[in-house]
Length: 120
Image (cartoon, rainbow, N blue to C red):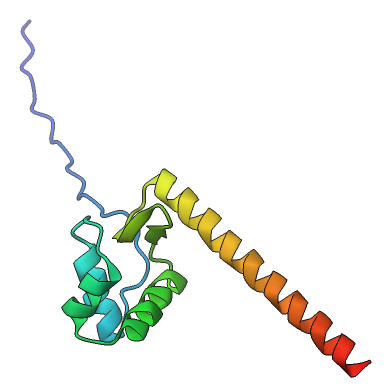
């Protein structure tokens, strides 16, 4: 007895994009995020030219993207910003931000000491 093979239907699952933070509503943040999506490192001066807004506005937009969860990475040993999910870049960003936070707390502590001494 011969058995005929019955074709089995293949189930094709749609590809799912990896999770990303919510897209920004701010137009400057959108513009910067779109520029950074190319994977290249962009200096702040390039982003100022790209967005046509002042340097402070670019820095505030980068901070806004970071607060929303976008990994806008920068480091003291390389100029510019890059959007990166790479573990090494995220670790470096975490270390740099922790160092800045500790520095700000040290400054706050010094100001508080000065205020107490002056009040005494």
